[in-house]
Image (tube, rainbow, N blue to C red):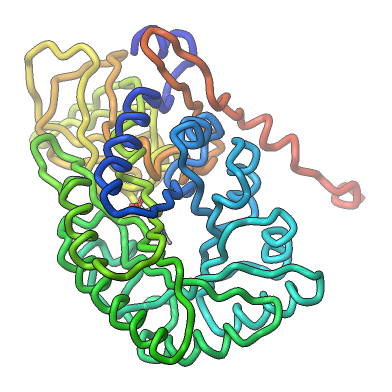
Length: 404
Ligand code: LLP
């Protein structure tokens, strides 16, 4: 860590190739008994090209939600047919790009989108492989901002309308309706809501087939939670695999999965340096670190917990508020945290930062974009150079007429 801080500066994300690979393999092994499976890494969790390359080498395709993510997956060497295009607001341009690239499956989130896609496909002489994303109206029991399977969320089509919609869409030229998709939320700590959702999908599958429809693929999404606190226990991939095997028995489809956090979350940390410790009388000190909410947004956005540990713990402990330098109170990583005692200049890490970390960074307060490195044994390499504020404002223009 000290070597990385020296060479690349702080704050910096550090990803472990070995951990990514181990997570990919454990996940795959847990699902192998299911027969025909397709694994698509959720690019949104960590779109770094080197991370995607690791996943590609592990035989994963990609779940993408924008033209940008699709371009990254392709640039990382993922075959187009292994890419699933999800997302509630794909533009006509993105749909056409997906068709041109030959991506494997579009997960359609509304009848309107399906009709538009069919039109575009027919017009340009393509056939679009599609799954209909269903909203099963199930409370995933996770943070409301990352819950996606309740009927008042924007995602998917209402399950009671799905069978007839599937039939209508399947009849359109340019359209190959081949499956169903579901994803009820992220950071799920309990498998029960997933199981209920999958049971509903099983019933829908039967209903569609009874009406003469063809279903060869079911995409079960992502969502398995990971431990953010030492000692926290989350469902294991093996438990998830057993549950899926039980619920999907007899479906006779290719099962597709879109894991993100469970692969990348604990394969990354955010390394930061303590700028100073600010002590006020009668209250916990503020440990001010050089990482901020623009680098790791989860605590500010969701009140998320990230374990924070000194790189060289002294054995002493302290209770402190951990904050970044940004000029708003939201830039707080933790209040009243019991933690390793740290002082100015010490290095520390936020753990479980490999998913939804760098990818959600911004340049707020003109702090630039955080750097990313990957380690592999004793090898270390930059996988994303720091983008400096000057690089960002190089794209900005001051119109001459301002000075008229
Ligand atoms: N598939 C779909 C359709 C999704 O919307 C998502 C995540 C995934 C797969 C991957 O889910 P995972 O396996 O990672 O749980 N920024 C939030 C998380 C947002 C998740 C959005 N969708 C966070 O930092 O907690």
